[in-house]
Every structure is written in structure tokens, then in C-alpha cells.
Image 1 (cartoon, helix red, strand yellow):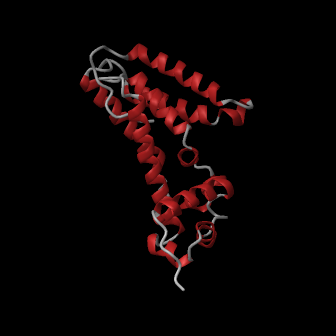
Image 2: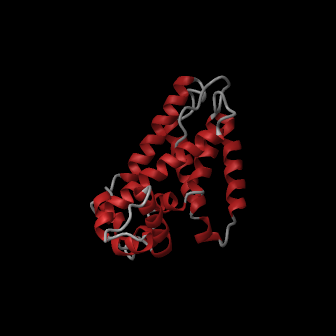
Length: 204
């Protein structure tokens, strides 16, 4: 007798896969384990996704969309959000998403062999995206044109990465300590802002 159809099967597969990846790591997760937890046949998983890698690709895309929505909510009260507000919002939502945090840090404990499928220019592309964002802010008048955009982008990207790795080097760091550090960084960044400009899309 065929199994009954499960509503929102694709979402349930993704939710289950995300939980298993965070619990066991990508390499230890299997399509069989996903199917078992969801209560469907392996073939049903493969009807939604071609492979384990395709599942993680979809999860990271979903996380990016979730982060964008959360950033937008945090900035709802800002008609024209400043660089400092946008930086704090984007960094906060990144820290709140364990899967994206793992992706940002290339954490093999979580992502395992998936990391080897990602191009070696990933850091450069992230950095160039921040540089382009700052250039847009300067054109919009949110940041002084006299500021070295390349240098500021390097500071912002390096600070976020460093904060995420702080516990590794200085000992346990609580979530509130990280958020306080982000607020302080946002305050420092505000000294480079002008008035009347728009920060556009947050970037980390």
C-alpha cells in the first residue's frame, strides 16, 4: 500500500536535513537518514533533490533568504538605514543562523566535504561584494567620499569573521558579548557616515 502524501514534503526534508547537518555534520548525514526521520522512502527525497549536495545548496539559499528577511525586519524603523545600522543588522542575523555561520567560517565540522565543492574565490567574492556595497553608499551620500572604501570593507569583513572566531582564541564568548561587540563596531563605523544617505542592502 502506498504511503500517504506528506504536506510540504520539500520543506520537511529541508528542515530535517538542516537539523541533521547541524547535529552530525554534512558527511555523516545521509539521504536514508533524512527519509527515515521524515517517514518517507529515499526515492521521495530524490524526487525533490538530485543529491545530498543539492539539499545543502537549497538549505544555504533558504538561509540567505531568511537572513535577508530578518535584516529587513530589523531595519524596518529606518527610512534610510545608515551603514552602522545595516552592518549591525546583517552581522546579527548571520550570528543567529548556525548554518550560515558554518558556511561563513568554512566549518568542516558542519559542512565537511561540501567545502571542497565551493570555488576558491569565495572569500574574494564576499570581499568584493562589501566593497561594491560601500561604493553604493558613497554615491548615495551615506558615507563620505573621502573614506577609503577598500580599507573600510576589509575592516568590516575582518571584524565580523574575527568576532565569529573569538571564542577559539580568547575563550568562551556569550551571545550577548558578541552582540555588544557588534554594537560597538557599529558605533565606530557611524563616525564615517554623513547624514541623509541610504545604506541600501546590508552586506557582511
